[in-house]
Image (cartoon, rainbow, N blue to C red; front, top):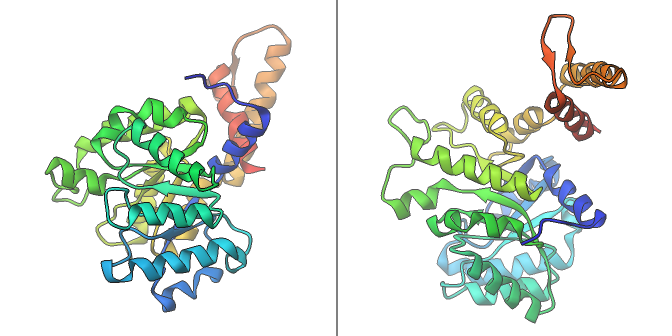
Length: 299
């Protein structure tokens, strides 16, 4: 499948890659939901799946549809609606209801294959919707098809979710010391590479044993950024500011990047392929391109 995209398509995908935080809170919890306007997350998750008990599935669907039809509650921020999986008794009706409400961006859980992605997109189109898709990679089948999934023109981001995958594989999610089971690291890298190749976003979840340990949340968030993830999702409001700090270039980073850009462009104009910084470090074209990307992300 070709990865050539129009300028408009590239701009759309870049907008999703600029999203740093995705905030989730139970849609049927009125107390927590009322706080959303004051939580400065970049994107709000409208979840009908894990955070909704079976007895509340239909009322939650009705509430989500209402917010999609009148999103003023979110103050102009994008929303990400997640239906139940098609294999459940609620999944098909969820997808149809979201489509008919004009869903602009939808996350699909427990995606099993590229063929299932096409099935979801076809069902949405039958009911008048062609939303952007966040493909949630939390099943082994999705890992096998991740290249094709990430390159579909409607897919704008991957979401890596090891929780359900640990259940499917019958292994612990976390090590005794609280670290993520190392078996997931190659899968995370695979998701990052697939997203980069398709020029789309890829989000991670901070699995800190104590979500109130902000230093540990920060450490794991920095690790995710260094691994190539473009965003983090969270359910705890104090995490949002930490996430934004991690994924927003600092003034020092911007200044260093601008100096590197100027230095490299100066030697490039002289016909040389590399530069040396004042401290003797070599600057090559990939350093230059990364610096340009950082400055662009800061604008």
